[in-house]
Image 1 (cartoon, rainbow, N blue to C red):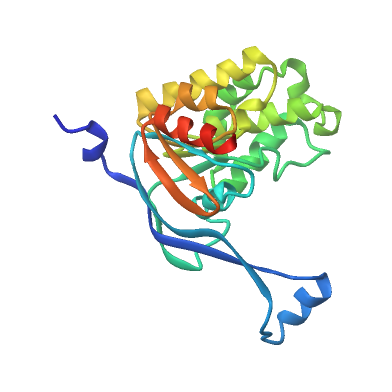
Image 2: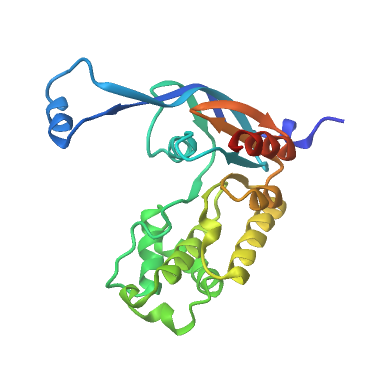
Amino acid sequence: MADAHTESPLAIRFQNVSKEYILYASDRERFISLFYKRSGLKKRKALDDVSFEVRRGESVGVIGKNGAGKSTLLKIVTGVTFPTDGDAVVNGNVAALLELTAGFSAEMTGRENIYLKGYILGYSKEEVQRMEDKIVDFAELDEYIDQPLRTYSSGMRMRLGFAININSNPEILVVDEALSVGDADFRKKCSVKIKELVAEKGITVLFVSHSMGSVKDLCDRVLYIKKGKLVYDGDVTKAIAKYSKSKK
């Protein structure tokens, strides 16, 4: 019998994707390059000819050392940056648990920031109103929800950001170490919520983490990236074993 995922609609496809960055020696050199084309500048390939597909409903881990290209891959999926070469296709609205507090206003209350972040994500006032109670309940900020964000600890801000993104009805959820928010109970709650979204709504999850335990817990497949190249795509246990062996 074929794997159910192979018959699911395509959520993400990378076809021979490369991303090259120019390394400027100074801000002055960067500024000059805006007006004059210069040769001899150092370049670095963050991703090198990467190809893979992710089907709707899959939970796919992305592992690799710092600087391997994981963050660049996520930035392409979320539309923050674009490939230098190759094609990247993303089908569905994306909720990115990356910079969880991006777009917040320190002078606005937690509740007001729910609406602000909702507008940034493209939702109408009525749509945010329908999500508001779920977000407030999930964040567990109690009376602080109506206090200015400047009174929040960094952990409280992260919890609010996670609650907004996880309850925004995503089709594709991109997670980069966001499960480090809050205490152990809240981290478990976040993990359970992601599993529920996969099981009940068939969302697609792309999960980047250095915690192999979290990868085993959340993912049914792993992409292992090494120096910008995809060196393994498949079984979770085998991918982790290859990654662990490379660290020795």
